Image (cartoon, rainbow, N blue to C red):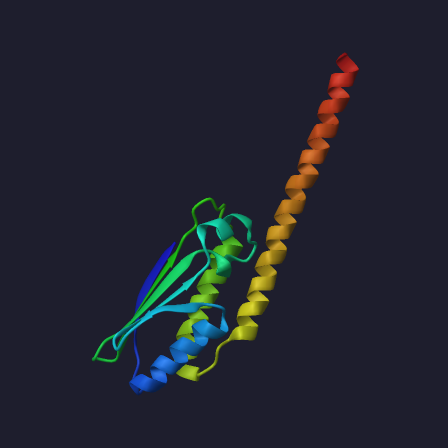
Length: 151
């Protein structure tokens, strides 16, 4: 998944950088690269993608570019390889991105709101897994009954 957008912000560069860093650091991302005009955050790995139920821990790279004209360009690259991405997981990332946009203006990490959305998404994922397991058990039971009847 890829999200790219620009926001015009009229704030001092230092304050803006602090708000951007705080948002991503408080939400579990790590600074990968940083210079005067850009910051890059990373999180997750391809291996973790296969075992985590937390979409925010998927392998992702976020690049923030600050222009002299007070334009912030944000590029979110989320690796969904080997994932069956649900609508809830897409909505979680979209909510995370919207909260990021708000965090620049309101100086808030939106940690609690992001956690609440994450819990809802994870509950949905567990429900899907439960349904798959239940369907598998019922199918195996029915198959066993059919085989025994005709044996």
